[in-house]
Length: 364
Image (tube, rainbow, N blue to C red; front, side, top):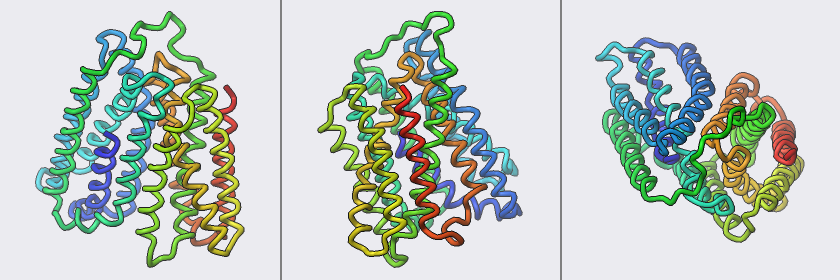
């Protein structure tokens, strides 16, 4: 599901600029549109996560909400290439963004049904790998997607989402019940302290990822081989997550230990990458950073599920909102770090973000 969602957003981002130009919408308006999409996602995902929890308590399933969002998203997505003909304009795009936000968190919450708590990192490792694959192949498939033309590209992306949703529904019906479907007692739906912790974790993770991947990594890769470098980085990160999930114990204490020390390792690596100029130390710390991020990408969702096991949808929604807030802020605050500041500055800020994440994770 994560890969199909990433593919739809990739196709959208590649084509939307040209489609908006056909409507006479300038770059400034398009930028505002993207920020509005971000705000809608931040607001909707926690709400839909909580609604999916209610559906699980009342019906025993989350799929009705997932299917409603998927079908709406696919229908609206297929109309986006026809913006000029239909005259629906940016309103259609915003409706599609809302539909995409409706089903993503409930779909991720199904992970809690796939494995017992101790094996959640192993189950999530394959989701991490699928997302890493999409990130890794993006530089290579961009020209291919643009060559298909908007109707074909949007159609294939929609078909992939429908296919994954169908498989997810089939698998969910056959998965053993590994979570308690009984409704929490009155007043036990959520804890303000835990929700604040989840939001803070999302903020730390979002800032760490954004600074590391968008501000630090591009500065370390040669311009003539940046596409290959990004592909190798994402591939190695996904494989590292699978490997670590298989060889480490799955207890709650072990998960927390690996997450906290991975944030410390990531921070140390980023500081050294900002200081060293020789290629051999950079290669060493780059490999260690890749492993650390693989552990973090793979372990955060299982950790979030463990914090609120009876209201998994709400927990993931709040955590995702924190990531969304971090990305929204990053779009306004750090667009020029790469070109205007020395590498040590974004490296230090990224290191600080990971340390904050480790501190919040270790609070429990």
